[in-house]
Length: 309
Image (cartoon, rainbow, N blue to C red):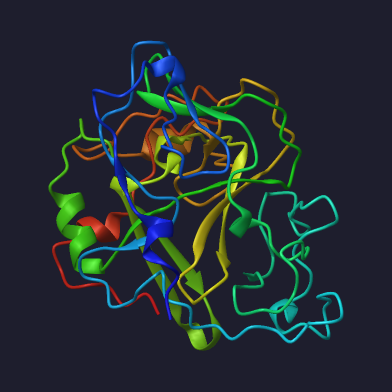
């Protein structure tokens, strides 16, 4: 069972649109318009989608609903009674993620109620699915190309945006990455989740051609966002970005491409890094900056897919 296709249609950005200062980068597909700065400039064309879409090489449909709903028709969704909260509560009364540790990690899986659940749309366990809630702006940075910033304060723990795009198979991911040069931006992210029996769940997402505003997020070795896999309709996770700290208006939004919250490398670690031809410089200017952007070496390996399980 899938949601209506009309909810996910892509909209190509065209050069004939209204001036950039009035441009909605999201093309009306988000709850809140996303502006662009400076006036007269706009990002390169891409197809906008607020949710994942199936890409080449994948055998899953990210729009398909495979999870059953809970049975909380007359009672609030609470741990112990709601099947969606079998791992515990996810959010507090202010819609803030509860379980953020000192290193910005979430200690348990996050499952939200879905469209098959009889609970109200106001259920506390519905946060990521409500979409964008803050005013964000795509802007041109000095050295990092386009970036994304907030125009209002964001409290720690609040959901900011998704990282949505094409869900790809492993072979297609390798093909795309190996075609890149050091000058090409890399939007592909690989999420690996360790589950029971030593198994690893892998999700590969590329918003380069089809994606949402998450594609404009830059890397930082000391980021203010953390990425959490959140499951709502199926085992294909939404890559949800939450505020790892209180964020001020006009502050650039960033996350750690490596998946770590803080990249605390000393000077000796930096010297041991071999930049090579595929390592790209990092311009985050953080005190703990590793000098180069993280990358997944397994995706450059000429051999068959490694057995990470």
